[in-house]
Image 1 (cartoon, rainbow, N blue to C red):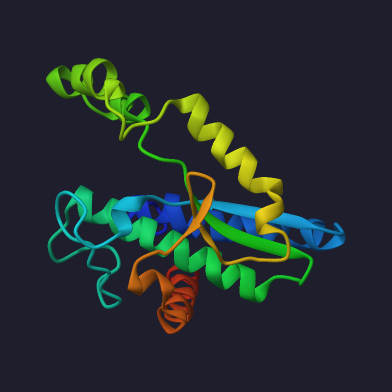
Image 2 (cartoon, rainbow, N blue to C red; image 1 turned 90 degrees about the vertical axis):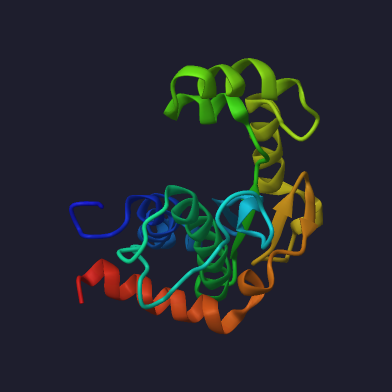
Length: 189
């Protein structure tokens, strides 16, 4: 939990980018063309490994059954909602998208020890379903000014392509509901 009483993963991956973008809105709106990217992840999709995505609006901090895996997945789903709502709410010259940089096992190794760290640093990087830190960064940078995204916003981008997010991530009513929830969490109500 953050000192403000928000589950740390949700605060880092969804609410933090929301607050930062809102704070930068005057500068972004002054530009003739600006793009904000919120990082998300494919594990927001149903059927991904581990515990399923299950964003419960009555328990956003997972007080009734905390799981780091679920917290991560829920926060990445919420990050897409934030991107969609920012795109809808910001000045027309500002577009916002959610970008999945891919699975970079070497960065995940930072948070584990022992055999898990060895697996993430030495074994998994050899598999095709992973990406390097350099490739992930290049894909994110590409999304900043990709001609394919010009004039569009609220997109979910994976491997330099607009992709279809989960049904929950695509639901505009859920995005608005999360925005209102985030506002309540931020203000402490």
